[in-house]
Length: 165
Image (tube, rainbow, N blue to C red; front, side, top):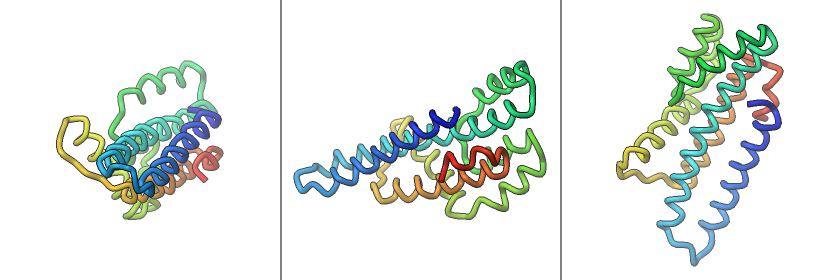
């Protein structure tokens, strides 16, 4: 993911949250439709986390390594998914123990909780489990995740931190 892709991806999510908010305030809107839209937003946010974390790390590699190393790391990162907080720190540790330690300290509890919750919601929905999430909860997770992504960028590739402001 590069800067234009990150911006487009975030703008799409922002637009979807705005749409969902407007829809949920419409008295004619079925609660079931609003609930399904909230679930969809959680799935999209989880995907956004994965592409964003990969994008931050690939940006670092692109500025510090050869094209061959970048291609290799890109292939390796494609194997990583379900980015809960611990997994993000584990991935950072593959690059630097210092990064992992700093990330663990910088990611505040609400950020960690939201990263973990969004993956749980995604997995529960993907496996057909009954799960309900409100639009307000989905939006809170999204806001906390944007803060977490900014911290990840600040630690791993500060020149892309503006992707998440």
